[in-house]
Each structure stands twice: as C-alpha cells, then as structure tokens.
Image (cartoon, rainbow over all chains, first blue to last red; front, side):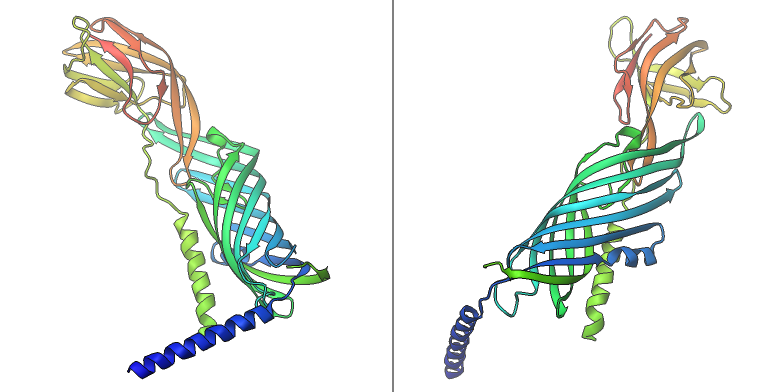
Length: 224
Length: 151
C-alpha cells in the first residue's frame, strides 16, 4: 500500500512538471479578430411561449487573449395578459461592454473563451396597456393607458464559455444578471417588461443566452 | 447520451429561469381611507357602539352593522372625485362626503394596477359628529390614519 502511494505521488509530480513545461512552451500570441453571431435563446423561447420574442446579435472585437469589446444589439416584443390587465411592449436595445477572458494564452485554449462580461445597456421601446380593470366596493372601473415611449438604462454582469467547434465557428452560453438603474416610465407608465432586460419587479433579473458565433481573424498578433 | 445531455440541460435551465420571472402578487394592494374615532371631550381615541355604516347611492351598501369600532376603513370610488357615507349611531345619522383625487399606479407584473388617492376635503353633517380633521392626505395601502372623526 505504501509503495503504491509513493509511486502515485512520484507519477503525479512527474506529470505536473511535464504539464508545466508543456504550458510554458505552449504560450502563444492571440490574433486580433472580429466575431459576429446571434443568441438562439430568443427563437427557442418563442417556440415555447408565443407571447414574447427576442432577437439579438453579438459583435465582438478581440483586443488580445484577455480583453474583448462587445456590442449586442437586439429587438424584442412582449405581450402579457392576466385577469386585471393586458400589456404590450416592443422596442430596440443595445448592450455595450467588455468580456474578460480567464483562460491562459496557450495554443490549446487560445480560440476558446471562458470568463466574465460587464455591460451597460440602453433600451428604447414603446408600451401600452389596452385594458386595466380594478374592482372594489363601488364596482368595477375599466381604463387603459395609450401607447407611450420609454427609455431604460441597466447594467449586466455575466459569466460564460465559448468554444471553437470548427475553425472560426464558436458556440457557447452565458448566465447573466441584470439590474435596472433608470427608467423614464413612472407611476402608471412603469414598464412591466423592458426589451433586452426582461420582466421588471425583482432587483436582479436572471437570464441565459446560447450563442452561435463566426470569428473573422485579421491583422497581426496582438502581443499577449 | 452525452450528445443530448447538454442541450437538455440548457433548455431545462432556460425554462426554469423563464418560469422564475413569473412571480405571484404578495404585496398589499387594498387601498382604504382609515377613519379613526375620537372623543371630543378627552381628545383620546374612543370606541363607538352600535354603528351602522354604508355608502350612499349604491345598492347592498352596508359596510358594517351594529358594530363597536374605534376605526373604520372606507373604500373610495376611483371612478368619481367624491363619495359619501352614512354613519348611523344609535338612530342618529350623519353623512360624510369625501372629495379626493385618484391616481393610477403600476404595482408589479403579478399584481397589476391600483388607484391611490389624495384627500382634498371632507364635508359632514353635525347631528352626532362634532368635527372631522384630515390628518394624512395620501390614501395608500396600509393602515395609516387618514381622518379623525370627533364625537
């Protein structure tokens, strides 16, 4: 038993030293690149629930192995109906920020991504509440709120991975948390749903995205 | 098996997060104007016996009957700018007419919309009531006193 233990330790140390040597030798420079893709969760959710659709793109510029500048434009439409009101919202949004990679700049990992992302987001949309019904002791009151324009600003933090499936084609997913910082819709015009952010109400709104991305390499090495 | 595991996990996570955002209405959305009864002699809160209270110009309007109360929550009508109640105490009736402004607000996706009110004026007869004072003009959900009725 003792021999097996000693042998295992020796083998482990040997493997570790080989791995370290391999990693040092493996270190390479990342090429600058532009990536373009889209999030497929919107169409998937639309297939499950026809009351909302969300189409969003993903554009990123790789500065080096660690930092990316990211822009995610999109369009969203949402309808909601329950016993006391109906609500519709439709509009554009854009998220701008950075992705920070956590992988080492080695040949085996240079075309993949695992890390976190930070975004500032702007949403400009129109909303309406075609019917509102309230009831108390005096009876029922029916009213509506006509179409009105709203803009909202929110922040997003995300963590995710993207892996190169075939040359320059990546797939990946990310888990996101969003928080509203300002909305121009107040009182009765407070937004039920903000395009690009989701249903309001909670302090932090979770979301998941699944990306298909094409990478266009260009230029010289960025210098890791 | 491995090929279908990740897509299944992803769709499950997606549906789970999507369903998590559908909250239930846990907020207090009942809006009443709270009237508290006071003794005009001592200025202290007091209970009034054998009270009948009902709204005027509405059928089946009894709010309470032969009740002993030291306060009452009165509903205001958001469709109009004033409403009236009769307060009958041992056969003697008084009418109070409340003027207010109503404002629609959005509470949450699950709760929807409610009307809040802002009290403007209270008119009243003085058969049994001595005085009425507005102490808190905004009428919101909760149990805050809005008017004092002195007997």
